[in-house]
Image 1 (cartoon, rainbow, N blue to C red):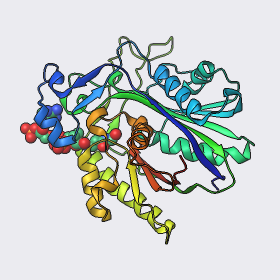
Image 2: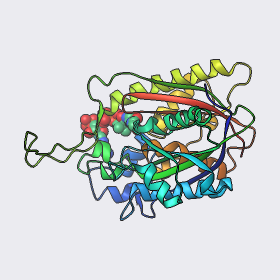
Image 3: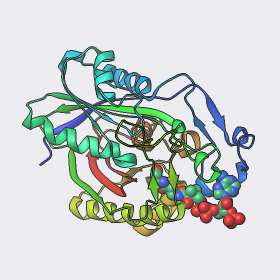
Length: 323
Ligand code: UT7
């Protein structure tokens, strides 16, 4: 059961360096025309010296400032990431240090469904743990695990972070969580950790491991899974339907299919992939920030969030927007 929780603050942070499709034409055999036509992406922010954990901490600090709370109010930090530079302690611990707070901390690895999984986890735990405020952050440096000689994947990714502060309130503002998935039988979206030599086994000089993706298969999964999750939430909403959708920004073409199949208008979907590319778990909170800044998201809106990606996983939640 989701507790009576609302979003009280939001923030995002992206690296300064912007790489355009034209820049990528000098890196791999690709073209601005191909990338735009097939994905909707024009440019992306990429890390140079920054780490995903730095971006995450910057986003969290902005969200905390936006919520107008003190670090000491926070009882739980959840970091959603597949690219944390630290195996342990996790991204959430690094952020706690930067914010200067002693609280519960945990990381979630659920690929591009990470942020939605983090939101559902945090909001379900707040009552149980008697916590008034929680922070959920998604921070990624996907360009660090992209294969820069594979044109079919490297052009898709960007880096960034987004965070929200959750506050225990008097009314139910987050509804109808769905988390679902299907086994990735054929490893259509995978990034292995490098093997290592130990006294007992492993391999010498293991090859560097990068993201590998069968784009067509993932596309097909995504279109079906997102439609299914949106329909399930639509049914749960009954006579108070959501009127806006913020979905994971992996490819604008996926969203075009979903818009048609679900029977909504495209302008009911917030789309900012053109500027950021696919930042995995961070696309949704970055999009929420932009949507708020641009006035697309307004107090009183009922908005559905949907994430999808490796696993293969998919999940959603409906939010009554309060900011
Ligand atoms: O966040 C995780 C979830 N990920 C996703 O949701 C990604 C889902 N999949 C996709 O977005 C799309 O499948 C891609 C954008 C990855 C690929 O688009 P596609 O329309 O499925 O292209 P394709 O892989 O079928 O390739 C079509 C052609 C091929 O050439 P041939 O064999 O027809 O001669 C590719 O070699 O396009 C070629 N190609 C490229 N050409 C120029 C592939 N990548 C590129 C490129 N530039 N970057």
